[in-house]
Amino acid sequence: MRPTYRDRRRWCGWLVALSQLTVLYWLLVGAALAEPPEDPYRSPMWHYNLARYLGEAADIRHSDRVVLKVPHFAEDATQVPLTVDLSAFEHEVAEVVTWIDLNPVPHLFTLRPEAAEVRTVALNFRIQQASTVRAAVRDEQGRWHVGSAHVEAAGGGCTAPSATASNPDWAASFGQLRGALFSPAGGLAGARLKAQLMHPMDSGMVSHIPRFHIEHLELRGASDQGRLASMSLSESASENPLFVFDLEHDGKEDGITLWMRDNGGNVFESRLGG
Image (cartoon, rainbow, N blue to C red; front, top):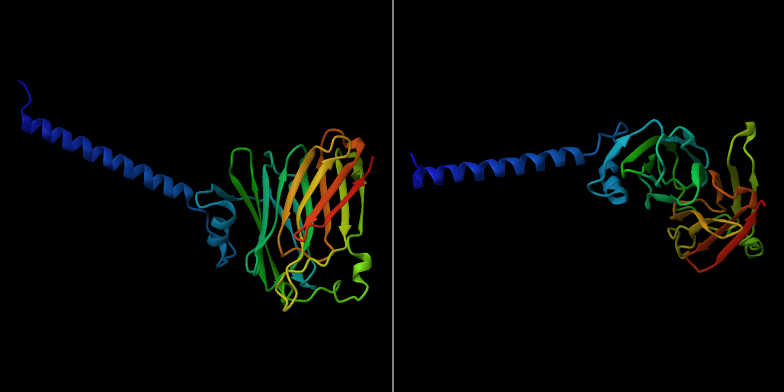
């Protein structure tokens, strides 16, 4: 018996309804997958900063393999040490983003390894009030692994005037770059770069003092000047920044060139090791 016109319309209606339900199902599944995990520190800026720095639809998970080392209490709110230890991270590191949730400018730095494997990066930062600090690491598949830690602080670090710039002789030491390349203890592979630049790193949050800070850094192979890693910095970085990198790359016997540029167009460069 041939189906009637009414039967065909009924079947078409069912097919349309089924396709709509299928689309709705996958939309709901996609939304559930994109929903970030809850923040154990219950920071009010958790969701906002994730979307701002990692993207609205980022695949995010907490990870104890991203080890974020900060003091429990910031004795000096203008100089708070931070170390991101990735020695136990089992994936390839494609990008590292760090931020301080409650700072006026939360972003601290974004690091992108290129021809080097970076296992540790350390830098001091300013903190405006007690806050949770984050380090998010993107792996080779685009997934973000987040390590978090909380720092208690009396605050005011972002709006405190630079001690360097208040020295009448600060211009004489401005731009001095001191550093060295070390072999890690215990016979481990790789190298440790440690360098400090004399720079006021003004945050722009002090009256009549404009923003003036290092905004870009590159590590380059000393022999071929090929880029090993690059870093962008924001106003939360401390004055006279001290950088520490543990990394492994080909040609490490030749040394590394450290190159930096501030937002005033000043360039600072030094060859370390080799």
